Image (cartoon, rainbow, N blue to C red; front, side, top):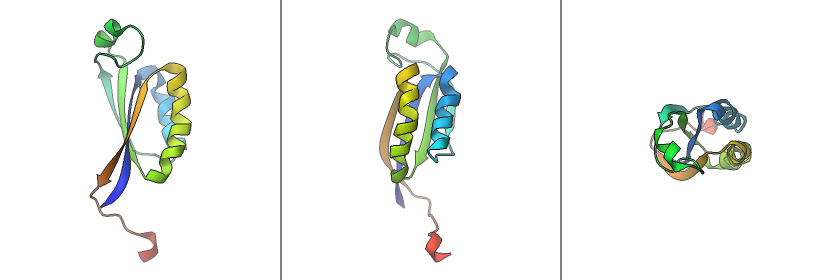
Length: 103
């Protein structure tokens, strides 16, 4: 087992490529995207539209703790400019990871 960080982003689908580019630039190459996310309060502004618009995406990715600073530096500007939200939490991955030194 080892510690990891979970990155959850909800944003407009039009900004998906910019957000994924920011994750990739940070060294986070794996992710999952769920399209057509609807809910209340997903974006600032008119919450009535938030409930019915199906142009939001939910992105989930995982990375090592030392990568999180780069993720914030690369994703925050996109979210600040175009809207969206990002949550980062501590998680534990149970899959074993081979140590490079032991290979």
